[in-house]
Image (cartoon, rainbow, N blue to C red; front, top):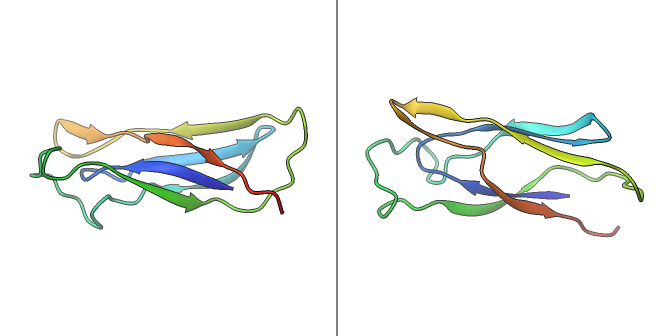
Amino acid sequence: MFLQAQTEADGSSPYSVSINDTVVAQGLMPYAYGTPQCGCTFDECPDRIVNLVVGIYEINTGDIIRYYGDDVYPCGEHGSYAKWQGLIFERK
């Protein structure tokens, strides 16, 4: 399973993915440019979409999959959010 994350220049937000209320993956979103870019505008440093590997799991019909994210403010009054585009599943 992959978490399609929308990374930001100004923060590394925490996230988790759970299946049936059991957390199966958690971590911090990577910075879009490797390190915080606090002085960079969105036009100069737009968000980047990346696929984060969150693992291989058995998922059955009726299972409940949840995503949780939080915001962080490492650059003063503006911050980043745990933005995401979706989850990608591959049959194994």
